[in-house]
Length: 234
Picture 1 (cartoon, one colour):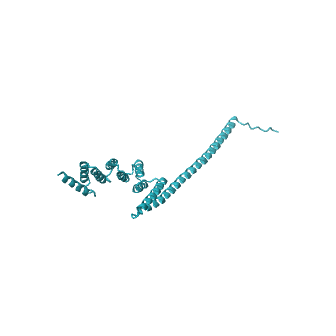
Picture 2 (cartoon, helix red, strand yellow):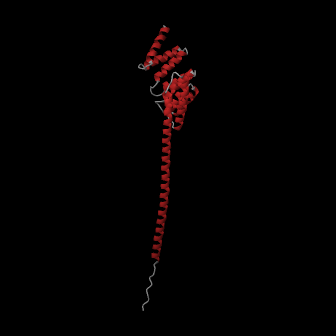
Picture 3 (spheres, helix red, strand yellow):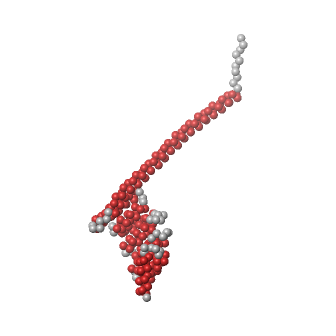
C-alpha cells in the first residue's frame, strides 16, 4: 500500500498568511479608531450645536425682556403731565430705572440716550453726564447718534453752569464728521459766547453760520444778531 504523500507547507506561504493577518488586524484597528473618532467628533458637534442654540435662545430672551422693559419706559417718558411737575419727576425716575434695566439686559445705544434724557429732564444732571460720557466712549462708531449725545451733553453742562465745558463739547460736535447739528453747534456756541459778553467771538460764530449754513433754521436768528451787532458797533 502506497504511503500518503505529506504536503509540505512552504515557508513562503506561511509568511504571506502572516502578512495578510497583520494587515487585517491593522484594518480592524484603524476602523475601530475611526469609529471612536466619529463618535467623539459627532458628540462634540452635538455639544457645539446645543451651545449655539442655547446662546441664541438667551440672546432672544434678553432682547424680548429688554423690549418689554423699554416699552414700559417709553410709556412713562412720553406720558407727560405738565400740570403735575412732581408727578412728572416720579415718572422720569421710574422711566430711568426701566431704561437702565433694559440697557443692562440688552445693550442698545438708543436706550442709553433715552436714559440720559430721563436723567436730565428729572434734574439728575450728574447721572446724565455720566451716561452721556459712557455713550461717547462706547458708541463712537454710531455716526447718526453720536452728534445727539454731544448736543445733549452740552445742554446738561449748561444746566450745571459749566459753560466752558459746554463750549468744548459744542466745538467737538462742530468738528465731528458729517453736517448733522453743525449749525446747532454754531448757534449754541454764539449764544453762550454772547451771554458771557464775548460779542466779537459770538459775532464770528453768527457770521460763520450764515455763510456756511444759509438754509439753516437758525440762519435768520444769526442774521438778526449780526444786524444788532453791526448797529451797536456803528
